Image 1 (cartoon, rainbow, N blue to C red):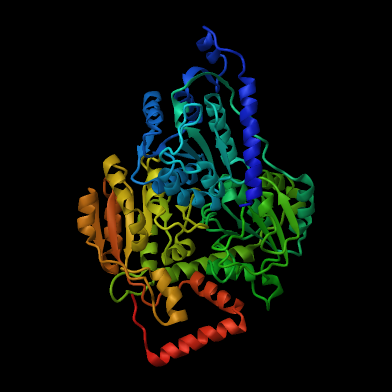
Image 2 (image 1 turned 120 degrees about the horizontal axis):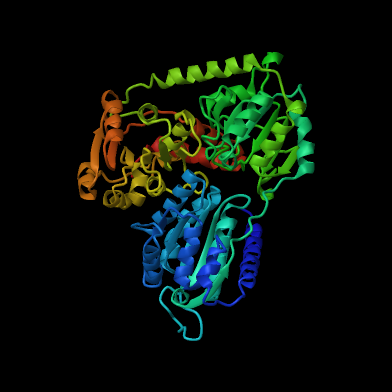
Length: 630
């Protein structure tokens, strides 16, 4: 994220708040209610700061506010209840941010959290950072210490909330007077969704919640989405040239435009790969969908199709990559391991993302939906005849991948994680929501878990916040009544946010918490063993999961072998309530394309001196056989 851009957003937001206040300068009168009826969408009338904030949230159609009350915000929480704004008590502010993120990713609308100053803010920063780096629209309502003439020094929680929030937010709106509250909140929703989405914070001194004001706050004007017409025209020749085979790399920016993306792929006869965040922008059942990524780290199908067969000119690979709504981030590219195509056209709503990683021929600052719509309107200039060989090639590659997935060998001491991924796909409905977490298996799931609908597959990609999946899934389940929601969580990630499962029990949120248990940070073990011939600080405690589930008040299922895997997962999915599923996991010698590719690329970039030091250390330890692990 370009923080200069974020600060500019702060100034623009402050101006927008001031403009809204100027528009509301007319005084209140006895006909306030009548005037309110004539101003739909306005925060209108005499009310306290807390009432105005609750009214602003209601006008935005907020489905839930996630957080924990505190002394500085009790007035606000009581008003949320009085005004009928839905809320959910959480166990930790990290979870509040992750729940708001899960809400946002699964609905496409900004998620809202409400936290107190000081530790409430600092606890939420990791979750807000995930939302920032993963381009998820979140609005944080943050209390602050009192201001004004009566404010005393050395108040409790007197950290600088605004400065703490700036690095993890697109922009921050510090409120100074009660009259600014409604405009700041309404503008925050616009800013969270404008351009590249992300988190926005509104910081309110707690004494303003009880002050009254005559509000005349209109709805903010939403800016038109960007579209650079000249850049679009420069990009067209790379897409229209029949001698150049086009491949599409689509990210989360395309999530609201799934049908347009599929239509463009058919127009160009282009295979479609996605980023991790973009999983679901095109159904994996589409004949031109090839999975995620297009390098050695990602889907083998995508790598094969994009590379083509060099010895056969008619079976060539992709010459031009059309990248839409995607950043080429480190995780999605396997440590920047995507091969450099002959030509690249990069389209994104944030100009700071364009052309930063791959050599790019045309950078188009544009909203993904507008770009795809304009491309469809230019159909006569770019349309290609049906490529039956390409469709057949993709079908054959997918069939081979599916066949290998059906023949996962039985692990020695439990279940192979890839078998769990495959079984989850078989037992979950096509429209189920699956939240994965930071583990080796996140990469197996990204490649092998088939995704059929937008906003049904979720991963903490670019901040890699461990423990994200459990609260994020709860945030989504709270507003997706009747939908199946599940997590795929490592045992290390579970330790980060396990107590949030008590929220599922209290609220009867029927999330299926699937835990891969091998009593270790296996991800770190895979990275450490080849480099150091031993592991350090990776062994976890052995938990009694059955007792844990009983203490939490949720159902329990235990899986110890492949033979019982599918049946027990199916029983968990059918269980009427939240359930903890412990899968006894044995990674064995399971290879993971992402890990192998990243290791190879990292090793290649080491200097000769660095390689020598690694080899000397490995040689010494191999001779002395000091391989104690902990």
